[in-house]
Amino acid sequence: MPKAKRLHSDEIAAVERSLESGWVAAVETGSDQVLLDGRHRVHADYVDGREGGPDPYELLLMSLGASTSTTLRTYARREHLPLERIIVRLSHGSVHAMDCADCDVRTVMIERVVCAIELIGPLKEDDRRHLLEIAEMCPVHRTLASKLDVQTVLGARAVSSAPA
Image (cartoon, rainbow, N blue to C red; front, side, top):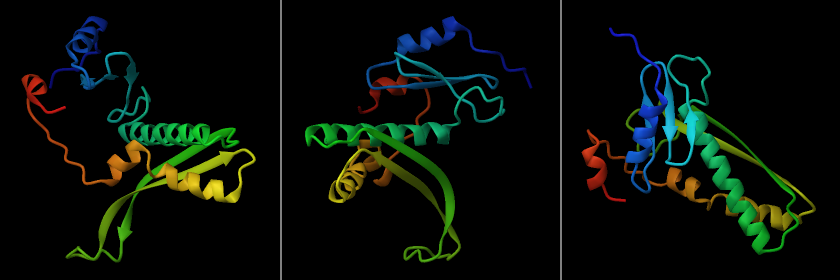
């Protein structure tokens, strides 16, 4: 098996230039992984454990946390709530689904994300409860909780023909 090489800056730049609006890319060589959105470069780590950056699940949780806190901040500003700070802590794991009504086998595992939200500021209890409801309306939460259709295609040419 050939030894994997590190990504060169010009290779990464070429992929960045090829990105169409609304697309991101993950470029990987076996020893290096860079995530691109056309504006930012984020190093990720999953396979070799060299701690080059967050692993994919950590990135997913960070995305949910960022979307949740942004949604809460936007709502609090609009409603003039005295929300000083938001801390969103997230965890992911698989748990047993003991009472799965649609499952043939009772020992099914389901994916679970726990999103613990700390709202700091002199808020009324009703405002805190309502903000918790608002948190579940954040765009990333709604996407993850919905039936998600992920289509995997082969080749860069498929990018230009894929629906936005």
